Amino acid sequence: MRGRSIRLTGSHIIGCYFSRPDGRSFRGVDPETGRELPGVFREAGQAEADRALKLAQRAFAELQAVPVGRIAGMLRRVAAGLEAAAGPIVERAHLETGLPYERLRSELSRTSGQARVFADLMLEGSWVQARIDRAIPGRKPLPKPDLRTMMMPIGPVAVFGASNFPLAISVAGTDTVAAFAARCPVVVKGHPAHPGTCELVGRVIADAVRRSGLPPGMFSLLQASGFEAGLALVRHPLTAAVAFTGSLAGGRALADAAAARPAPIPVYAEMGSVNPVFLLPGALNCSPEEIAEGLARSLNTGVGQYCTNPGMVIAADCPGFSRFLAALCARARTVPAAPMLHAGIQAAYDRGTARLASIPGVRLAAAAPEGGPGPKKAVCRVFTADVSLISRRPELSEEVFGPATVVYRCRSAAAMLKAADGMKGSLTATVHAAPAELGKNAALLLALRRKAGRIVCNGYPTGLEPCPSLHHGGPYPATTHSFFTSVGTAAIYRYVRPVCFQGFDGPGLPEELLEGNPRGIRRLVDGVLR
Image (cartoon, rainbow, N blue to C red):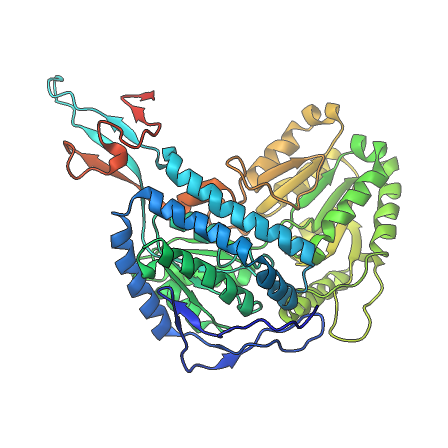
């Protein structure tokens, strides 16, 4: 039942213990009713950031000597704790985000599953990429030294929770558990749209750290609705890396602040993406209604608030085009208006769709009915335009975060290839094609390989499978570092760097590089993987 009381302290968690300062207050808001929710939270600032990072730096040194099994055990305690507290966590997340209970329960399962996956990754150990080249003292003309290299943790990590995934990409999300698995302490800046959810999840992590006998500075959670705390974390000399999921403006501001430091640090920001969908004539003529139905479902998943939402459709001008567009528009008109995550996202969506409608040559083809009384709700909108307009109006390549897309009529394969060549970096690109068309459109696929981090064939971009093979990243403006993924086990590589040891004879080497291989991990030894 909406509004059920959930007891919250409104405190920060600094070094795994509650800390309640006297800063400016703010509250969570129910996006469905517009009412403030129980729980008063205080604004963190530079003092809280400094305290958390000093504790994190102390914890970092201690963590390097902790047995790997103890940290893995802590991650498993986080998973079990999330599942034990699922009721109040899901309830509060629903109140603060308006997301359905079923979606949030699924997201909580993904979050606990991620923690267990990274625990297993730690224990398996080959992710450290240990490489050993033994010495050859008698080599001529020069002796060969002993060289051993592996990935090692970089230091305290600042994590910014995402608005659209209050569990899986937030306080206990991939960013946090990947950093823990790399032996890095974490300071989380909670998202102001769901502070209560952040506190409940933060309690679980703090309890798991304490029960595992790990240094308390391993985890802190700072609550803040403004920019001061976030910038303080990025600019602090003890912060080694930043993880962020959100808007292009927000990610760019953090990246610029990090680059301006005396010692710049990486900001792994996942930001704006239009996720283009290319519809080739063979597929479009064969099943236009089925493609339209799948696209509409993808477009409106989570009220369009997915970073992989298909905001651009480039469709071949063929007999199936009219049937596809008619089916898509008909489906869009039936989508109920729904609350977005918070008023700021709703306002940005309204501005974005108004901007699209104001561009000459762009036509509103379909819109769902407006919502009823109460706070404004998001309406699904489908626009149409000719593909040639994209090169003349660069703003068409900017993300509109929400359930809106533009369908571009494309009159030739050359025009489609030109659109692909001119598109900005994106998290995903999707191609619907008949089997014979893939080979004939090799140039299009090659262009998409340069522009997107994940290419989807005859599917839809929303929905991720967190696994070792997933890459969730892409060229700017999709992310600041296209080499790295923010979802899946490879996310751990954002928080490590290679360190080479030369001339060591046992003492001083990390366990993973010792001659006897006590961890039993796979290593590259003298050029042979064993």
